[in-house]
Amino acid sequence: MNFEEFFREATARKLKLPPFPEGAIFQSSLNNEALFQLPLLAMVILTISKGKSKPLLSELGQVVGECLERTVAGFRGSSQDIGWSANLRIRTVNALTFLERAGLASVEGQTRAISTTEKGREVVNYVSNGNSPLSHALVHIERSFINIRAERRISEAVE
Image (cartoon, rainbow, N blue to C red; front, side, top):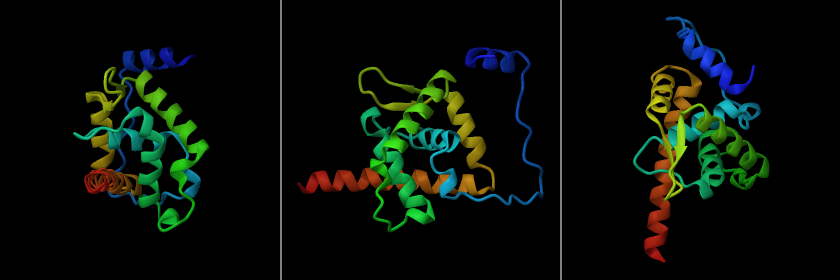
């Protein structure tokens, strides 16, 4: 089964993931092993592209890296600068490709800005409204993106 067949079949059968059981304790945590995984990168892309300020296609890998550096405890204050990681950039492009094909995100033609579709917003809101390490991380990632944008505007105004 290929990618398109999977989503066509899932839509036809009206498949949905079951909700997380009430009262269950979520034991997993985000760690460096999860950092370059496509689902996490896809969620980061959806999160930072759902607001009014949209990341540009040309800056996506850098911005995702900066947001993760500010969010993942192992990279805070680190000199690794993962925003320049070729591996992260390749995987970010793969995640964006998946999001576009699944109809969760789009790249605007003129501006090359990345936007979350209505379907993508539903996914982000569903995850963000939960009480898991991922939902908490997405809140921090969204704040990090807002802060990065503000810092860039200030530095451009000073120059």
